[in-house]
Image (cartoon, helix red, strand yellow):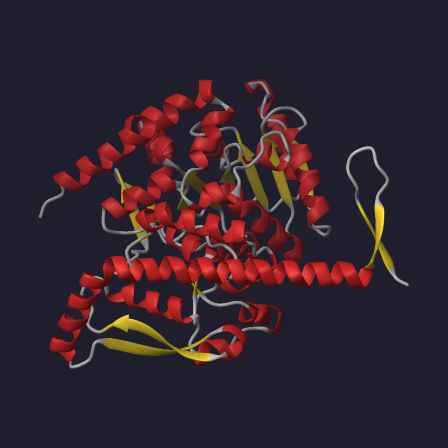
Length: 439
């Protein structure tokens, strides 16, 4: 008879249980959790419908008066590929999406789950994404939350699959709780993303993570001499008063946006940030592409041994990643020629420099003519994260734009001025720039 070992209380032997009983217990637990989830969905949606019934009645009357019908019905695919009509109030007036509560009460949808797909979209779901059809679609999904704040670097199908395998009542409640600040921070659907975000005369490329990685790889392969900078509100505050740094940013081939402050600044200007293309999230994707294309990297900067540790960690993850060399950022000015010689003789195509802004960008600009790698990138404190020196904020904090709070708690003595004074100062300067623009 097949048996499995069940851990017992501390200090006691584990007890053995028949595998069939374990499977029965697991199935029963899943059934109970699903029943509780459905009961909570039904109760919350029904309570919301009752509370909002006067408003919804007025909304339905208005829609019928304008269009002759109260609801619009969109064909959608639900759990187990069951078709259903996704409801919304007719006309584009406010409150249009409130009708989806009816779908939740009926059991077509849940509050948390993958986005409901049209029949055409459902046919295009890849084989490894089919698990999304084993659960009800939701009003709020992880992809919706991350997309709204510009951190949806993975595909919708990948995030839906992760949601399925990690689904629990606690996870659902957490997602719904994060949806509250997420809905406030997300870009308006009506706002149009411009190709350039401009702050204080500095043009920032408003692009996706995938496109940014492809741009770096293509430049490295073609040998196109390029300097790339990442900027957050602290960088732009420095550039506001530091003319040398501002000039370097203005003359770089590309400047990319980093952080919630740029996201909010873009909203203030009516040009939302497409994605938060920060160096920390870009680095592993760049390493994956560099490994595939056999493009060697050189890591320069941070404390002694940190760059080498970051390089070793990435080579463990991407076995074919060519690291041409690594060197710390604490060297005397007199040693600069020797460091540059080491970089040039390594054969690196991409040089990543972690000295902090603006020092790293000024150093690259000053020695650009001497450096042979075609692509030069300033990456701030990136090596500290990937060497394991500093832990990254958990994704749930990044989803609601609070990674800066995590960094503040880690290094309050160094970061308080940047975040508690610098961020409001940046937003004030953006507001002032918007106010002073001619009509």
